[in-house]
Image 1 (cartoon, chains in turn orange, brown):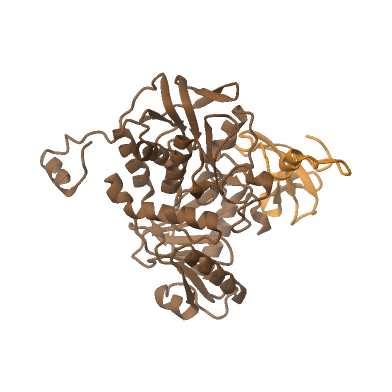
Image 2: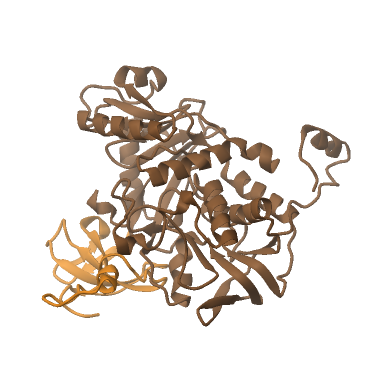
Amino acid sequence: MLYIECPYCGLRSQNEFAYGGDGTVKRPTLNKEVSDKEWDNFVYNRKSPRGKHVELWHHISGCRQWIKVQRDTVTHEIFKTVSADKEI
Amino acid sequence: MQKYSVFSLFKNALKGHKDWEVAWKDPNPKEEYDVVIIGGGGHGLATAYYLAKEHNITNVAIVEKGWIGGGNVGRNTTILRSNYMHDENGLFYEKGMELWRNMSQELNFNVMFSPRGIINLAHSDAQMNAYARRGNSMKLNGIDAVLLGREEIKKMVPILDFSENVRFPIFGGLMQPSGGTARHDAVAWGYARQADSMGVDIIQHCEVTGFDVVNGKIKGIQTSRGNIKAKKVGLCVAGSTSVLAEMLNMTLPLETHLLQACVSEPIKPILDHVVTFGAGHFYCSQSDKGEMVMGGDLDGYNSYAQRGNLPTLQHVLTEGIAMLPFLSKLKMLRTWGGIMDMSMDGSPIIDKTHIEGLYLNCGWCYGGFKATPVSGWTFAHTIAQDRVHDLNAGFNLNRFNTGHLIDEKGLGTKTWIS
């Protein structure tokens, strides 16, 4: 069981959260010409690192806020959690 | 190579089993190979075997970080099937079924191929319609498919929950009678033994640490046991693909996720098909030892742990009990996990890359085991001929750029969508 520190609610079990994938992916800037490569990187291509990973989680059965989590993908150790608008 | 048969067994028994040859050698890496396959799992071993057998390329090494059969080829639920709707998948996996049928004879190794039939249960009229459509598509591709009604399934698998007042009543199902199971370890060992006998070096406990690429062309690999020169290199490393891709400065449409499976304590024969729950993600068969072999969803977040987490297991087994209520009375014997290379459209990638002489075999998601022979067969062709075979032409890396996705179930890494 993962225990995730929600920045709004405190420490909660993973059962309250839904996973939202890689948190470092940025949508190409709006109102600007987007190349196919940029779009591919946004939609499909992922680094999927073995080790520290910044990811989004949705506290769907709690405060319903999106949060950013830095977690180790091998040991599942969680180093840091912040609200989704902040950088880790 | 010593042939395995009832006579050799008898002969060796009389001699106290002292004269058996080793099934495969344990060589040190040579300085150079024509082809180096990274990853000594089912797919890597099959690739080396077909390179030798079909393409006469025997100066081949398989480089494996752990040991033969220790990865996903020993961690799956042993199910074989080709019940796909899309042509790319259907034709590919049906070639695989053809290879499965002859595998024990071809490899002179009993892989315990058991075409007991696989039944996907349907729990609504809409699902029955979708299954009828998939079954018809399968038949057009020459794959056997039978649409079954509730009463027919009740006769075949009476142990399923046929009560009226359940959340997901059984309406019927789609069966592929030729689907089934095979003994996964034997597949790895059988391919390893034959590949070794044709001259392939199986190098275990040898981790790849880097690649030598000069002017866009592969020259060799760096490993924990020294540098190895190679004219061609094939990647068959499933969940570790993204780790090797990073060494090559490639970012792939993959995420590595963890998939669990489990077996119950052994019981008397009760289930003689492979059955899948249609209202969620759960599948079950009974092994020859009597264990109920079960699996289902991913843990749901990026993971290289090779070890699962209990909430997912609880979720999967809840579905299991909805389908087979007697499971709740059984004790769990073992649970385990493997790391899956989940592609973004749920279909595999077998292709060349932008680096000359470097070939990619990945994206197997939930279904790598059944693909073992055909993946090796097509990947060997792709490497040997330096061009893809018709059967894996659709599984190209470029499809994510051109939009020709093969979204069989719309299942990729984002399992929460479905």
